[in-house]
Image (cartoon, rainbow, N blue to C red):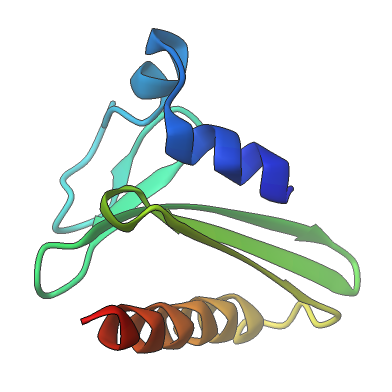
Length: 102
C-alpha cells in the first residue's frame, strides 16, 4: 500500500493525474475523483482519501499532494465511529509533521 501511495504522490503520468481530478461534487461539500474522495482543510490544504473494509476490519488511506505526505491507518473495528476516528488520527499526525517542518 505504501508503494501505491508513493506512486500516487509522484504523479508519474497523465493517467494518475487524471485519477486525481474532481469528477463530481464540490471540494467544500464532498468532491469525488476516480476512486478518491477529495477534500480540503480550513487553510486550503487539499487531500485525497479512500477507505474500505470487511467484517471486523477497516482501512483508511489519505494523502496530501502538496506536502508529499501519505498515511494509511488500519483498524480491527468497523463500527460507525471507526472511519471518523481513522481520519482524525491521520489528520493529527499530518498536522504535527507539518508543524515540525516549519
